[in-house]
Amino acid sequence: MEFGAELRATREQLVSFGARLAADGLAVGAAGNLSVRVGDLIAITPSGIGYDEVTPSDICLVTLAGDEVEAAETPSSELPMHLAVYGATAAAAVVHTHSAEVVALSATCTELPAVHYAITSLGGPVRVAGYVRFGSPGLADAAVAALAGRQAAILQNHGAICYGASLPAAYDRAVLLEWLARVYRLARGYGEPRILSQGELEEVSAEARRRRYGERRSQGPALPRR
Ligand SMILES: [Zn+2]
Image (cartoon, rainbow, N blue to C red; front, top):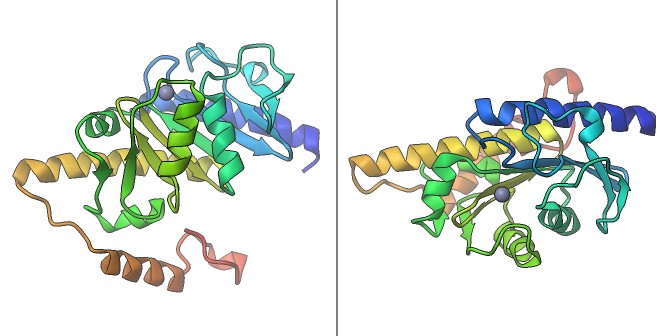
């Protein structure tokens, strides 16, 4: 796709996924933020505008160093955290949420354990990064550290951050993370949950690769996607 057309499509995609945040229970009001990498630029949702009001022209374009290229509105206050994730991983999109189950877990636990095998889609048990003030470089550092070997991390008394090879992939991880946190809470209501071992998780990952989950047959041979 031509660069200008790709940028326009990305702006629209960010608006449409932003509009889903509240309905999917991932954030309320203007909380949470989304970004997508387009070439050497990052397109990110604006700060402080409700997702029912954001339009494609409100999406901000910044460089990987955070310099504004095109920004009619103020970029999200979590821009430093998004940039840090792009710098430390192969992310093509980053989703930051304030979902209720995840925030509740973050206030009481240091990790979301493997209560269901689908957690392999996030890279394994999800760490809770220690509390650091929103919008700070310290939060960006804590998030990146908690993401080591993972595609999702929980931020203590704050929310979560997920990334992926596309905005739909990163968003799906945020939804999955919230579901897993809910399942864990429900399981704890029954008693002490049984947790899958590292060996059991590795077996799941190997089988998913063998079955080429996430690929269509029509796409033919390709690298396994996680
Ligand atoms: Zn936040």
